[in-house]
Length: 240
Picture 1 (cartoon, helix red, strand yellow):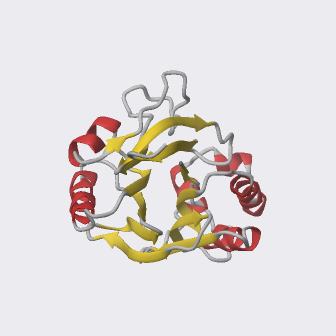
Picture 2: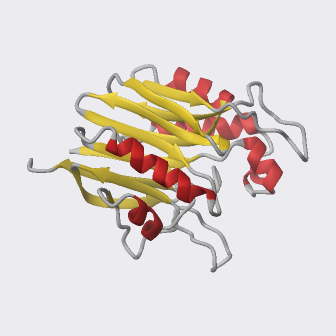
């Protein structure tokens, strides 16, 4: 069995620019980074995908997790403060994968239509693990198709895609027909809490090919981020 998780951590500059609650509840960004790092260090999942990772947080994770492999991709777009000065020493934004064993990066790229969203793929053993963050609105349709093409080019491997898709479960399943998208229990909190009932509140997903989702759940991350922590237990097909 394999345990996996995905979490959009909320980059501080994006939080300030969009008026999210976290900056108000955590006026000291260093303290929030410590809280996020402690959360991740306390998790037992073997594979954790992270989105909107600042350089400061990445450095914190690498120091706090010396026994784990941290692979990352830096986006070409630098987040730009529009309201207040950034409280970051290294404001660059990253995708990251935290692994309990070594992994080799096989792809790391931004989407052509959004230099602040993209894909990080790591080969670990006979498994291909992908962390991703897609744009909102209609741009993510083409990005989903790009993910599908990438998956077809690695059809010989079991594959796990973890991330913030900015799309509903049905939309992801429609674009990735060879994959299964983890279903959440009715009692699970949303992966992206927000008050507007007309906007999807489950936009983070665990998507698998060549594996079976045994269970999936969402843990409330409190005020550390605007997303909750999505996790699942997977099984290689044909093995118990």
